Amino acid sequence: MNVDVKLGERVIAVEPKERIVVTEKSKYFYDKLLIASGASPRILDISGARNKKVYVLRTYEDAEKIKSDDSKEVVIIGGGPVGVEAALSLLKFKKKITIVEIAPYIMSTVFSRTVSEMIEKQLVERGVEVLKNEEPIEISGNPVKSVKTNKRKIKCSSVIMGVGVVPNTDFVKDVLKLGPRNGILVDERMQTSEPDIYAAGDCIELRSLIDGSIRPFPVWSNAQETGKVAGANIAGCDLTYEGGIRVNALNVFDKAYFSIGDVYDESKRMKEIERDGRIEFYYFSNGNLIGAEIIGDVKYAGLLKNIIKRKPSIDIDVFNGIQDFIGVTVPAVKHLSLGYFT
Image 1 (cartoon, rainbow, N blue to C red):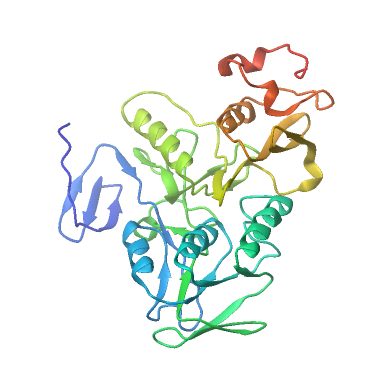
Image 2: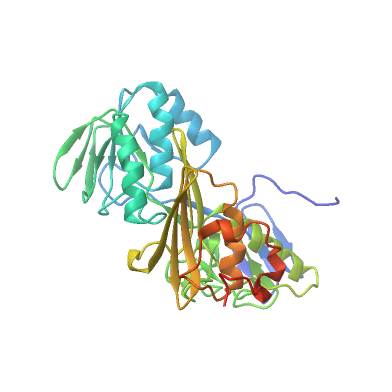
C-alpha cells in the first residue's frame, strides 16, 4: 500500500512550526500528523516496584515472561481487568494467588459493586484470596520475597502489577494541550490543539458520551473507532465521534460478564431482569439509557452501544430489557414509536 514503515525508531519530539517529527535517528516532515502512541502500564511508586520477578501485563512478551516463571505464590497488585484476567489464567497452573486491591471492591472501574461481588465470589470459590481496601507499600526481595501492605505482609515469589495505564505523551507534553490525566486533548474530529495534528487511541482524552466529562477511554473499541475518525479527517472527509464510552467483557470460568457505559451509581439502576439464565441490569438518567450490565448470554450486547449513543427516550415502566431491541434496525432507533419508547 506504499507505506514507508520505520521500525526501531523512538520519536523524541514534534515541532509543529517546522512540521517535523524528530526521532532518535532522523527527522521527518509532515503535512498531516497522526499520533497513536498508545499507553504503557502504570508502575506504582513504591520500594521494590522494579525488582526482579515484578511483572506488568501489556504485551505478548510480558505474558510469556509470566508464563515461564515457576513461582508458586503470586501476588497481583490491582483487582481490575488485567489483575482478574491474570488470576484466571494463573489458576490453570495451580498457583496460590492473592489479589491486593486498594478500592472497596474489585473491578470497580468496570462493573457495579453488585456484579463485582459476583465475580469475586467465583474467584474465592476457586482458591483466590482477595484483599480489598489494602494499599501495597513495599515489595521486598530482589528477586521478590514478599509484598507489604498497610495491613499485612504477604509471602510470595513473584508480583504482577495491574494498576492501569499511563498515556505515552512525554514527547509532546510541551507542544500539545494535555488533559488532567496527561492524555492528548482532542475534539470530536480527533484534532489536537495544533492544526494538522490528530491523535487517537489510548494516548488521548476526549469527551464522554454519557456525561460530557473529559477523560481517557483506554479500551480496544475506543482505539479502533477514534483511529477511523482521525484517519478519515486526515484524508479529507468530515467525520465526527459521538464521544467516548467504556465497554468491557470478561469471561470468568463458565460465565460471561459484560458492561457498557455508566454502571457505578446503583441508585440509577432502574431495571433488573432475569430470563433464560441471563441477568440484565439497566441504568437510566432522565429517561435515557446510560449503562447496562449483562451476566450470562451476551450475544446481543453490542446492540446496547447503539441504543446508548442514539439516546432514545425510554418508558422505563414498560421497558423489558434487551429483548425490546432485538430485531430493531439501529439507524431507525431514534424514530421508533414502539411501546417501550416515548
